[in-house]
Every structure is written in C-alpha cells, then in structure tokens.
Amino acid sequence: MSTTKFKVPDIHYGYYLIICHPTDHKILMSKELLGWTLPHFIPDEHHRGVVDHINQQAHKMLGLRVSTCQAIDIDFDSTLKRGSRAYIMDNLDPDWQPDDETIQWKSLTEIVDLDLSVPRHLGILREWASWIWSRENDPARTPWSYLGWYKKAEGWIKNRLSLLSVEVKNIRQIRSWVRSCVMKVETDSGNYIFKAVPSMFSYEPVISRVLSLRHPRNSPDVVAVDIPNAWLLMREFEGTPLNRIIDISMWENALKTFAEIQIDLVPRTQNLIGLGFPDRHVDQMVSQLDHLLNDLPTYLNETEVQELETYRNTLRDLCWDLLEYEIPLSLGHGDFWSGNVMVNMSRCIFFDWSESSVTHPFFDLAFFMSGLNKYLSDNKMIYHRLRNAYLEPWGIYMEMDKLVQAFELAKPLTALHHVMIYKMVMLPTIEERSRWEMEKMITFWLRVLIDNIKAYQASK
Image 1 (cartoon, rainbow, N blue to C red):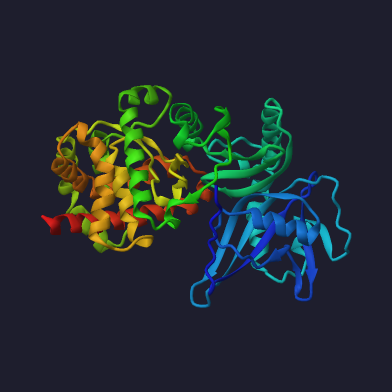
Image 2: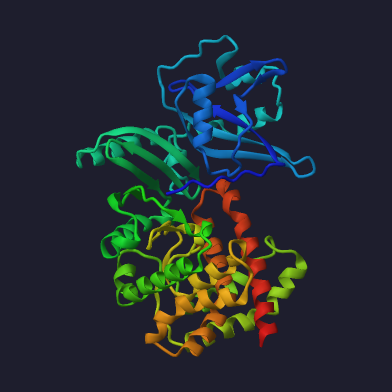
C-alpha cells in the first residue's frame, strides 16, 4: 500500500502543534526571538490528513512521541501562496518533560499574558480549549480526535496480532482527518494496516471482511475487525497503483475484474443491506431530488442555482430512463478511481470502501472514466477500450449497445449520486466544527453535475 505525496512546490505552510499536557490543562509553548509560539515547522507535505511527517517532526524537535488528533485551523493567503495550519496533538509520553527553559508547559491563563509571535493563536486556543479537554461523548465527533484514543487503538492492534503470534515492533500513524485514521503496523512477520472510520462509514470493516473472504485475490487480507468501533486490521498489500501504470491492458484487466466482482455480488445485495450496508438505489435519488435542489443557495452562485433549477425535470427523466435498462443493483465502490486499485503482476486489489453502497454499478465506471485523462492519453480509442472492458461482463444482461446507452445515462447521474452522499449522509453526521473538511465537495460535485448535463444534452 503506497503513500502518495501531496506537495505543491510554490505553496508554503507553517504547521503549529497544540500539544497538551498529559494530566494538566496546559499547552506546550516555545520561546523564540519574536515571542512565544506553539511548536512549529514548515512541512514537505500539504495534504491536511497526512500526518506521519508531523508526528516524526515533533519527535525530532522535542523528543516527544505524539499522535495527531485533527487539524483545527487553516489560514491561507492565496496571493502570497502562504498559509498556516494548527493541529491538535495527543501526548503519548506522559513522563516527558522539556529539558530546555525555552520550552514550557503553559496554562491558558498564562498564555493570555505572553507576548505571542502569532497573536491570532490566542483566539484559536481560547475557542478550542474546552474541545481539546472534553470528556463528553459526542457521536458526531471522530473518535480519534479525543485525547487517549490512540493508545486504546494501539492496545487493540497489539492484542489482536498477539493472538496470531505476531509481535508488534512499531506503529506509525499515517493519516488522521474526518474520514479516517490510518496506521502502519510494523511486525516481525511483515507489515499490517489499521484503519478506523467514523460512524458514517461504519460498514467499511464489514464489506472489507466480506470481500476478503469471497474475493481474496482482489482484496486486502483482513485479519481482524471491531464492528462497534469501526476498526479494520489487514495485512499490508504491495504493488503499483494503477494510476502509475501506462500499460492499457492492465487497466482493462482491472475494470473487467471489478465488473465481475460486482456481478458476483448482484444476488447478494439484500444480504449486504441486511448487514447495515447503505441502500442508494436510483429510485431513492428521484424521491430526494426536490429536497436536495430546494436547499442549495449556500453552495452555488445565483446563476448556477438557476441553471440547475432548469435541469430539475431533466435529472428526474434521466433517473427513470436509466431504470428502464434494468441493470441490477450491486456493490458500488463510491470512490472508484485508479489510485484505489493496486496492481501486483496480474493481481488487482481494490481497497478503500468507505463510500460504498448498494447502488447502480455503472456509477463507478462513470466516476473512474471521468478522471482518465489525468493519467492516460486523452484518446477516444483508449476511452472506448476501457469502457468496453468494464461493460463486456455485463453482456449477460443485455447487448453492448444498450449497455453503452445505460452508461451514458449514468454519467450525469453519478455527480448527483455523490452530491446526495455528501449533502444528506456525510455532512449531517460530522461534528459541525469539522464540516469544513468535506463541505467544499458538495460545490465541486454540483458543478460537475451541471457540466455533465450540458455534455449529455450536447451529445443528443
């Protein structure tokens, strides 16, 4: 399983770390020439959810072992291309004490009287102090944002692997954001990956386990799950992400294999729903369409809202037209792009099922094909080869020309599918102060929806 770098060379961020005392309500502060400040550094990684480098830098600067709970503040000047972020850190070394007088634990009362090099940090610390030390169990808050959660997860990992006679050597936190917390577990018998997901994705460990058993060649090897906590532990899987491969036959094989897995699961969709899997069929899109379109002014400008309003009936008609093709519901990945496919020889491994559901399977193909030109030549012949590689296994249901027609109908509706997931499923279950991490995706998908409807109408 690879780690992608998200570095933008001409953008510079300063990362500020809010490191809490293990027992007292104090925060670690550093005295510098320009005044007191939170410990900080300039990173070589810009993705807000990638955190391994943050934890490592804290250890390098302070000799302190920490985990990252959550990014809580982002300040960015688009003109200067400079910004800053503040991260809440969990102190994993309760006996650690600073050995330099320029590094001190300070209470919020003491911080008020300090000469701060970044004055705006005082407001941030005041606003977030009660949240940092909260002991209330808020179901909308991601569990790993609580102080103390990380050590509980570490204990579970070590316990589960000890049952397999596997000794843990090291655990590294790779990601921490509202969508997941991911750790890499190094052991005496290879590496493992731990993943925790929020309540909105609580079914991911279930489907990962199901696929591991039913399609082991094309799935990560899941060794343990904790359903109540939505935890997943699997062996690390090696290979090359599909988006780094230029051999078109490998892409064709991946799409064909994915379609065959979906077809295999068609008779088992009710079993998946019975396991608590989301049911997001096309009929549901029709029933929710008016509610969605009546609540969009904050996401689009006035022109876009009016434009989308003119497509209301078109969207409804597209849904009914797609249903007429009687493509059966199956497992939909929800985030099916080439980076979520790992290739090892002829073996394709599909992973990251957080946004999956029982839905129209062609939504995955439309999602996949929409980002094709980022990694392959923008060539119609390649496009048609890959589209057909996916559609051909579905020939057991109807002729290829009808499958292509159904796919063309699914393309604009795919964006609507994602708008509904973010607007009606994800955001309502995320803690209000953390919604900024996902909220822009609604605007993104609405604009994709408008563009796709225009393209569909132009092709008629």
